[in-house]
Length: 366
Ligand code: G6P
Image 1 (tube, rainbow, N blue to C red):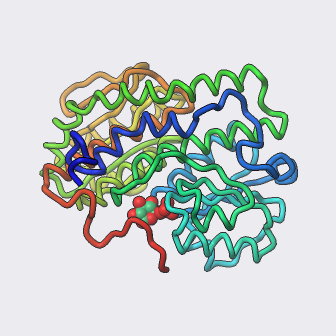
Image 2 (image 1 turned 90 degrees about the vertical axis):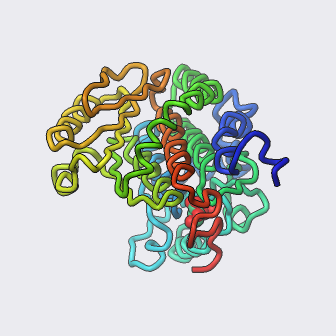
């Protein structure tokens, strides 16, 4: 009811603004990396496994895609990410040394539970879940668990559950790296420091809301939007597009920016806004040339840069700058303005933000 919402108009907005608290709670008390964070048996399991298979749906699947970059980069263990509803219905080659990781806000998604069961039946005994509900079926079914502390999420479009999943998955990448002897003490402490800074960093990003509202008023008049990201931020572009389509009903697609020339560039006209996730990482120069390809066709760019990206606003290039450069944790911070953009665009269009048509919070049937 209204009392629970406080100053917010919708649960989604409230949940976006709860993310500093949710991340703080999810990472509470973590001063060192150790397998036991994931359960009593984790030490032995992490020694035994040599690859990771991630199974999830929807927004949780995009968290899994991000985790692949982190785990392969930090722990140097191969990772496969599969959409749960596809994985269970295709022939695959099981590896008994896989750690099967399910990611689920609710812990009750039928497809993800069935995919987990399928993996076990194929002979993969080791499982871990990143889940927001400690009493859920998923937590009962998995050998290991990390419970995110986002708190109850009411809005159908997932927000705080996603960013807390990402934080937990980053911890998993660090822990697997440590188990394989690939994390020095200095690296461990540097990463933990960055994780503990997240609540403060996210609060500063949330303060960009007024600038995002100005963009949302433009977006509300569009029927299509393209989202671009590269590397670690490609899954974040996917999540941004998903948020926009779920609640504003604007058709949105995400592409890794290097793939533009292989198709979506044909869609770019002055009526196609192109949202670009552009932190200053190793791909920024490549991304800038992708942005020029868009400008050359008259596309309007809406760029989420960070403190270090050298991208200046100009004709047809709108820039909102996040206050810092966040290194490997950048996907978590870059998610927030995309959530706000979707929220305010939906608000401007007058849709039912917390209960979008045809969608359910938790899909417990196939
Ligand atoms: C539904 C929700 C999405 C969610 C997906 C997976 O489609 O509307 O927001 O990402 O299910 O849910 P889970 O609880 O498994 O993360």
